[in-house]
Length: 318
Image: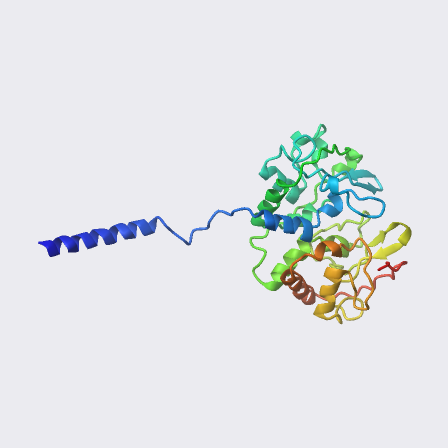
């Protein structure tokens, strides 16, 4: 009798264990726990948001009391645009925005209408590279929002853009498709980082482009990453973005991996010259060695394009 009872007990216990196991499916996707550390890394050392959203002084130094508070003016042939205040100030920044509204603005260039007296101002001009940030993975987008929530709020009312309605009607450009994962392989991770870091924004020019913005952004045009965009850098003169394709004559085909890495992290080209602004190597300097290595792997694998970039009219001081 005792043996039968024990056997039955064991059987019942086994059934209960199986039932418990059915409710604990470790293969089910777990909700993402936002990482402010990764969000800070992406904001400060990959996307370089401060380059546009933090005002600088005449010497190019950022105003530490205005970090990410916006108000930086961009003069265009048809008017002026100002970068937005992306600190969590509730009145002039994004403090009253929901997480979803922030992600939508980053990815699509459409910010919430309730944040502006004029609803048209909710459409961001594509100097804000949402057509690139559209490729952000869900996790990275959530991490960026989590970090922005921790930034010191700054009360800074940014002026409204002065763009004619006819120009506004052409917005927004088609946003990119969010990446399912940014780390499926070294080259894919490199492609993802090159996209989020905005390399395409400066190093890709469409021949039909008249505003300095690629007309078919994110798509491999005839000059994809082949450089040639011209930048006026004040009294220093004119510089041009470099050809990043592995063409051996006009691009970086003869550069070693170490030389490409040095250009990314320290702004030093293959001949030891300092790369001029707007190349944001101080931003990329704190990028992890692994991420820079993935970028190198990606750049070495893209199609080479012959595109002789004009010589710069200045040599940047060391």
